[in-house]
Image 1 (tube, rainbow, N blue to C red):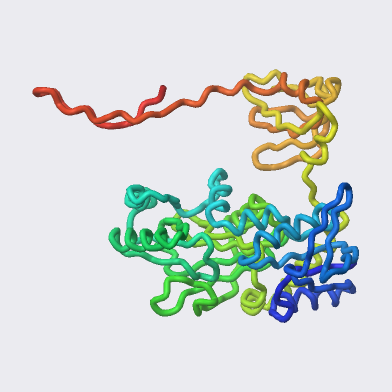
Image 2: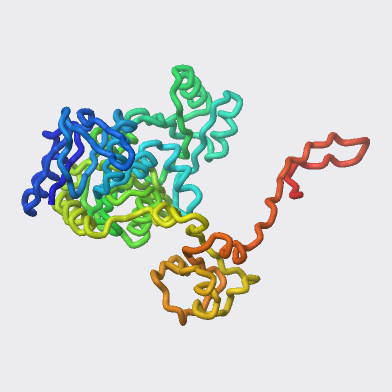
Length: 406
């Protein structure tokens, strides 16, 4: 295979190890400086030029996109995707993970552990936000910070308020995050490739430093993750749309707490700690996936007019409940069941004899008008409004504030 490694630092440890692993497996490999790529757009002909020359055909791309070039770097990765070149990490996955706020917003809708976090702009919202995340001490993070830079521990409300005000006056966006005290200056880095954790290490802060990053002097040690942490790391990477990721977790009292999902995890620290060939694991994965790349099935299957992809949920009131897929009449209505999701398990191409249960979700392709008939009616969302505190009249007790649903 011909493999391109997108990296601005051909001599850095991670790039050299990836190149070495590719060569050892008999692949042709070239390191491309992202900023020397030029995107060319014509109808039906997306192409890339490198240093002024039309780029050769590659079978796969391994992106190593630095934080400072995220926008242009993801544009280049996206262009390779449009050219049907397999990319170890997608452009949207890289963009999602690079923005700390966006990544936490995406993770927050899933049942996966994250530290309580707030994002505010108005000065009057700062103190209430700190209280909502559990009060001081509190972690203040710059959205664009990397390697522990821009992460501050504030011990009191006054200090936290002053730091946030100063950073905001410098036009910096900051997150307010719960300080997970039980982690005691430690965190876990799980290295995810595909659907498994191939290595894990614990990073321990030294001295009075609360940040455990290796670049902050943190000590590393190889560990074996228990099933709960491993599942959390894999799910976080998949939710973010990443196939290769470094997932950083705090060891909280209630289990793993996701701090960050890194789309360009460094290899030096974790290979040194675990003595494992992670560059080789990445190249083996890329080699296997070139034949069967992931695709956006909704985009691929919604070109025909009137046809599309939709999820059909089986509720207690659904007319499909208790029937087999064969007797639902879906096929007769030009609707094909692609997969069935049940209790966290996805069953691809399910048998037509399978009975449908409450909570099942069918991923279907077919006529949109026909699928509308099977969509449950959405109940209107309840609007919650605050009750005002009413001052006491004569000897009548005051009514306490609360919430009311309408």
